[in-house]
Amino acid sequence: MKLWVTPQGDKWLCDECQQELEKQIEEEGWRIAFEKWEPMLRCSVCKHCDMEVFD
Ligand SMILES: [Zn+2]
Picture 1 (cartoon, rainbow, N blue to C red):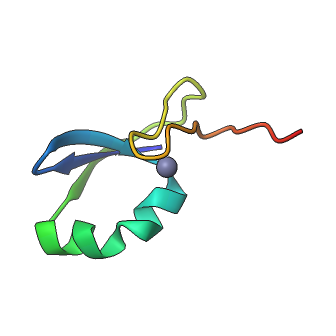
Picture 2: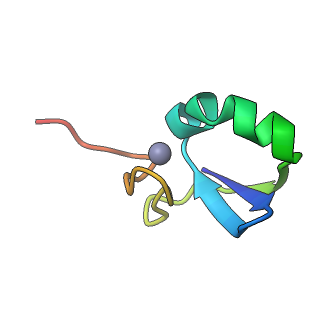
């Protein structure tokens, strides 16, 4: 999960949401503060975590 610095504050984004928000990220000039592999982190858009278990 990557922590993005955005005009609306810091947001954790999963890779899927990052792709969906690609245009907004570019237009608003979001930048990555840092990346962290942490199963407890939740994406602030879809609320899923990095290690989603499908069953
Ligand atoms: Zn997401």
